[in-house]
Length: 587
Image (cartoon, rainbow, N blue to C red):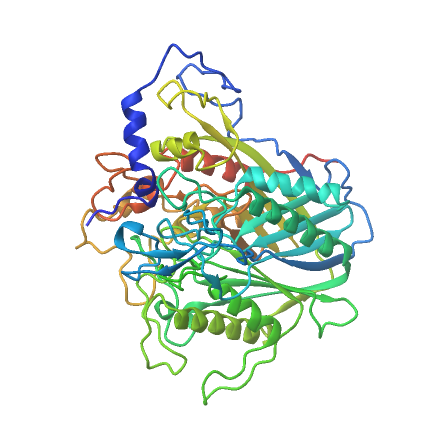
């Protein structure tokens, strides 16, 4: 069965209208920064692929000297961003129980202002028209600030499906206005599918955005406020590193997380950093957790705002986990602020292909249910607390050298549905080399600007990806080393299976990160970070259907329909590799 994209179902009527209109060449094209065309006819934006000059970097860059007292300082902060539903319409009748509002199917809603229009808070993820009816648990902007010598990094995670660069840049501006002293402010989304639509793709009806600019601006200010709290709280700190593999947990990988598409490769390692006051290692400033799984375990029928399993993970780490079954013991929390950063979660890494069990280990659960969300988050919290208490596996340092470099690049939006979404105002971001007054065409193709970064925190190196990265692009793994036990890397009996002979044998991002910096013992991948624009699919298995972006290619190729296009990942990968390998100039 071939699926149509969520965005297609939203925009199909408008797509047909615009296709009929065609491209009016009588309208002059406004060139908003069209790059020069090289001898091969390619637009390059003047960027040298193998040696990008970072937008900024530390130490050694402007206003971030390398010299100092070599003391690590750390602080944390958090701000509630849960939407206020007090005066918001909500669904009262859902005839088929699918969690979406369908007035033609007999669904009804509470019309609080009596205007006859469903003025809802639209939930991002799955399909459109999912109006929030309540709050299951809070959503947050959570921040960790780090400073060593002249370099200050602030890492913020927000409980939304994704956040675009324009908004992130606005949040950075607010932080500067508040007097926050930082060199780089990183923003990553946890990618929860149970929070308000901050992108626009999941609105109430075709061609109508689900994004609320006022809510996004509230998030921008919350990011800045959390960053200020964290920087204001900086204190001398020690740092701990450890990790655990979900494959080693009871029941194995697929009891908790699975891969929705072949090759069946997933990153089941949870990477952890704990920051403690230098004067008291028994208490906690912050815990950083990096793990990859779609926070969509609550299911598409859920209409309660939630951070999904991430809520139970953070709560358990901070406050402890009471014994969930008679054979277990209570685990005390470590306190502080837990900040979760999403990993390489592309190709539907999450509930797909899982066999979840209740706490007793015998009762089967639905792959997507409230109970499964609680079990997954709680079990991950338990394993984190055990890993942090295992002195044989924890490395503690009294300080950590800090460094970062970031880089902006432009990517072509080849996806015709994304082009249409921009033209209709479903999305809201700055576009380049494009006249929005004319339909997109071969001579009027929009480009977007995105951002990538590499950060070093002592023994850790963090690589960011501005979308949903296929874990194979981070890890490799065609040899089966990252495939759950007992499962094939590729099911050769499936329709149109991927050909692993076409995949590179090595040179993937994790390997490149350690090759460029051998002292990096822990390599983190922050997905949905610094921007958000959909899936990043391996070049060797990128296939479009007969009607590109509208119909799915034979087999399993849903992610291509929700990607920028075939040129995006190759171009982005070149820049990421170059940024990883970049060496600051000698002082």
